[in-house]
Length: 428
Image 1: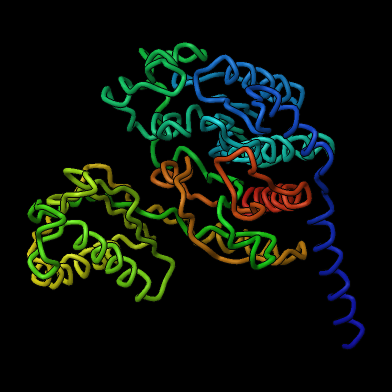
Image 2: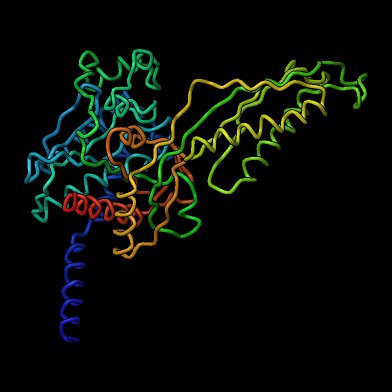
């Protein structure tokens, strides 16, 4: 009996080792990150490869050439998304899709989006080099214009409307003009749309863009979902008056009330357990003279969390407790909800568990966490089981030329992506 248990244990360990024998090429990943960074390179060290620019086209051509060399059938869909297809052994199975984006913000960094795109390409290189044929067809995707409003992924779920197409992009072209410029065809956008059930699973590797993983020394973030967002414009009204002749106890100072409200917002948001965040990012006082007590302040409020109910619970607390400020300062406070909400997009629980299992078996520390930033995955989560893998951003810096992720961390993320994909392909 003891012998049988030993044999079974050795067999299990052998199978485990075989399951993770495929190794990504860290040096190749780093070289391609740097090469892609040459397209749109700016003097500060980052890139300004904004969507629909000449640099964007050059970067896309570079990636498409690599994708072809990796054996993919490469095409550009009507929304401008680049799709590299690889057949599977069972053509009747739905494809597993994975990828990210390569467009940047103005004066951005070399890792946001790029790590996920080049990591996806690395997965396909490893499959090719090891002659691995998956059961499912595979689709690597480079989404168009992620930074300008998730344009490519919105098109995939049928949510790219006429209003969005008229928006002016950082390139100086409208979204409509930009899509055609990069090889899409706005007149055929309907052909891009995927329905629920069309995709077996979607995976996105991405840098965290925050400092949690880096500060805690954790290798892999298992993303629980992408947070919902609500914005409000707030108007605080008091009475403008002479700063020299109005005693302090006779003032209806809108700026004082706004300052108290800002502190209140911080106290309410930090007073509840969780990962929610609340931000006052804009404030303007009128009339705006140093010798006039402000009579009006316009300010903003943004609240983000994985739970839409919690967002609204926090807001109601802020709104209710702000009444004490109006009574104390003799002002009025009005909250105006803006039509820019983003609904929370939870990732698939099964895929989260697979990512965590794979990370652990590869020897990587991992943490389940929300994504505070938006990603194409939040759109695809509406139509397909979705998973996201985070790797650390040094010092939590992103959307900056100083953005940096170590090559070891990029390789760790690509390894988790590879083996998560293989596990889904085998088990689903």
